[in-house]
Image (cartoon, rainbow, N blue to C red):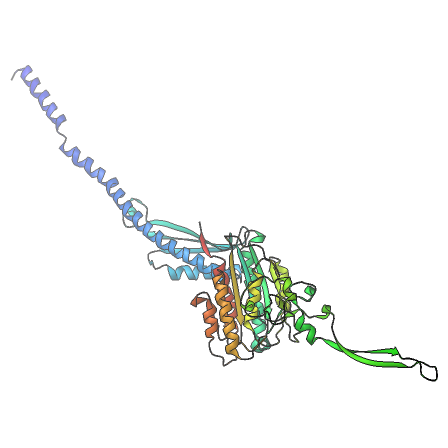
Length: 457
């Protein structure tokens, strides 16, 4: 073979060797599978982590709401909040693959009451461990807030009758009302957003003795029952007799003189029917009506078991709490007059001059009583009193006022009150209690409902 031929053969062989790349494709593919499988594995692990995160978020949301219900109106210590938060979260999270769970629960009231729950943990990876990532961290946060935007006018009709002295019912009522006031105060973004009236009642309601000059008071019965007989002696001179001397002829008359109205203790009884079941404004001109006509005025009465004076709508929380502390148990039961004056407290114009209700304002009456009706202005039988109250309750609800009723049946054989069940705006707004300890929990439940407990984002 000549040199040229040999050279051509060598160059041809080199070209074929350079063109031979089958082994390189195999090596390149093998190297590429590492990031490909890593990416696919990461997607699988990431999907699993998202599923766990969704479960953790649901558990955190529920924990935040449950803590808020525990806190509102009865703030526990930081340690208790933390302990409860961890217990709630771990019981709600049903994902055993999550390890190293840490839960942090914090309550703050600086910008409106709220509780913040933060939770974190980790899960083992199935695929990304091949490229050095053996675990993935998962974390969530939830906030629950209450108040902030709630606008309410709330009237509390509270039983102050003699039986409330038994079984510490009055003490339980005072403590529960203080807590409820705290909740309602926290629900207000602005001071004027939430206003509360306190209406203690027995057979009568005390509207304040300082109102003795008010033109909406009917004094006719009070004047007949409060005063004294005053005897007056009058003498007239007679004509002179034969002896030239004059004699006197005297007579004594006795008249009923009513006491001064400034001695009135402030109590009023039920209005004339059917004004006893409405919030019709009083008309001062009714003072001139004949006795047989129904009057819109409020009859004064010197009831010897007159409760403490009511307090109209107010956001003076110190005054409201002080009014609660002044309550004392005495007298018979007339739930209807407590409801009637709670409605008056929510009504603008005389006698209570409540602010005009805006379209965004809720109106609520909460009635608590420990006994069935025993006496009002006309009756001493329960059925007759209940019949008047049933009409009143229907009228209150027709006025778009939410009505809660609570029967504290402690140390009593009274049956569950059908009337109070019918009066409540919804079946679940009637509460039948058999222990004094339940008063606080029911008030807390109502307060939480009114304060619009919610998740905050």
